[in-house]
Image 1 (cartoon, rainbow, N blue to C red):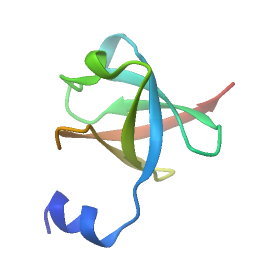
Image 2 (cartoon, rainbow, N blue to C red):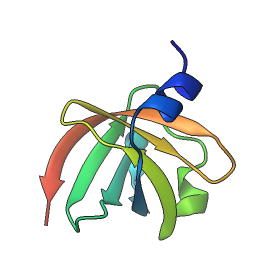
Image 3 (cartoon, one colour):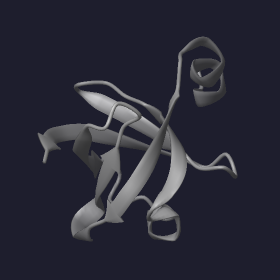
Image 4 (cartoon, rainbow, N blue to C red):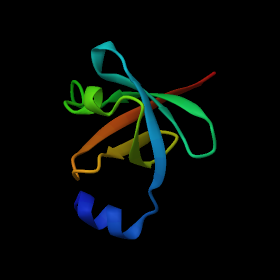
Length: 84
């Protein structure tokens, strides 16, 4: 079951990638206003810095989450903690 299958069968929400922090951590703001720290499962998300303060698609989970940019690139994250 690939990412394309997940994208077609599960709901993604619009989110803002607020900040790309060191060590593969990003801060996102969900559509409901909650801010979360996410930690990349594989080192770091190579495109995250280009999407700071921009919209991305988010499949949020309390254990793990997926971000997809408007070019279709995706990164998987561990959902770390809610902030602010």
